[in-house]
Image (cartoon, rainbow over all chains, first blue to last red; front, side):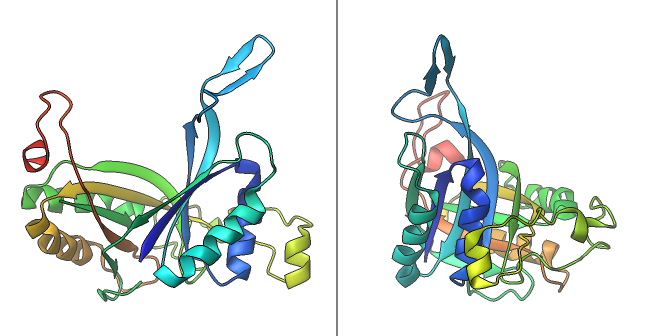
Length: 105
Length: 139
């Protein structure tokens, strides 16, 4: 199992969620976060924004689904401009469902 | 070391905290998140989540948008997310099982939306104040 953490534009969130749901991945957790990237924020004229609002989408999927989920998120979240976000993949060893106590995703 | 990520009901947070304190693991990070699972958030557990308004199921439905994707695929044009608490804690390897079992015991109601627990590997931990590493940093 892998955990996918995608930092995307807040305005793209619904589009990504709908696409993931359509592809059969309805389970996810989202949270609003603030951050910056390589460009150290955003410079608009004299105003400098250091921390920009993003949405963090967190989901755990089986190994073989990772590439597909990444593709979906990339296609839907891409605008081609700076600040589209990042996707990180990390490993998950075990997953439990609290309701049943089963060790399955 | 392992990282335990538990996504639980908001109402169960105090109970879970107390249970973990009894086990001797009071250190944790709490975060308010929104999410959904296989049931797509359609659980309507008003009586289990007291802080949700009675009309919650309709209150959180996002406004239908003319998303071309949704039209093409004739998806229901709603995305429901349920507010949850996410607990993150780093624990030694041998304590993973007792902690996971305790969290499951405390949080189990038998209804959809009880939550999930994930266990991830952690390579290194450092206590900033002293610079101690790994096991000593989290004890």
